[in-house]
Image 1 (cartoon, rainbow, N blue to C red):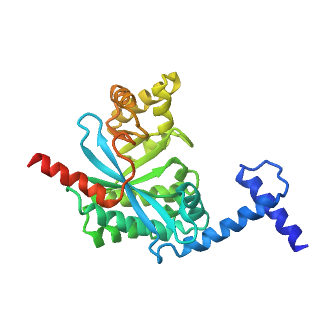
Image 2: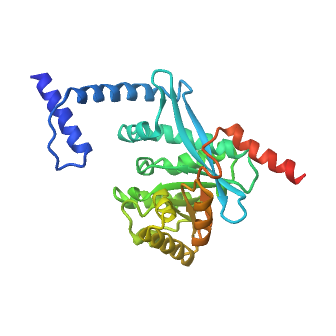
Image 3: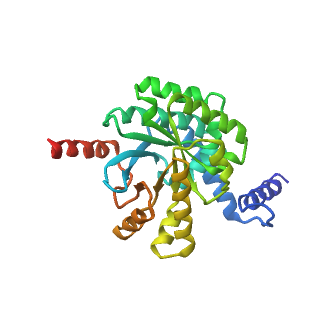
Length: 292
């Protein structure tokens, strides 16, 4: 009986994972997936203590001068038990188990500390999930990360996606307003790919709207809808005195197109892949040598 109920539960969770309203039957692979998830969760709970988590940094540059304006902190996990684990795999797991709260606090601390080694006009962007925002202690976590590192609040940008407004929107908004009151800025990531509502832009003063890579790729292929969306986002951001960052720029052709469309900032492999902290610092060392 226990095995039957367990297998039925596994089929139920698969149906939920596929969006609900689905009918799934049990397959042995479901048990293997559940066991893998259990082992990953166990390892993830020990990842910070085992020094398995590291941050990489991807540059965001001025669209015209190509000067580095900021870096986005990106979390990576090199597990002793599982090897390199894709963020697409462990980030959702961390959110489901609420491990994202302690992990997110660690990311904030480490990102702010690293940014103190950069020029004073270069900012650090840190992704924050809805699970973190609904924590009453989130604003205090930001204050602690800034205080412990000595980083000026205006150099910290919090990145959120539209999904934070689906659950406990008022709580998330209040948390972000407290962070903004400290002097930090807030960027809206993946705009237009999920739960888009212009009401979000009216209720909260974002500093930057990030144009998703899917629109950049579409625009490069002269897709009319993608071109129209980017033009509309740029025009809207300009009128609201917000900046725009185009993500996923990988070729010179895409770069020139994005420039013509009016995006202020650019992020993508064309200017740099996510890199270890030492490589990020090297960028500024070389800049100093060239200007000396």
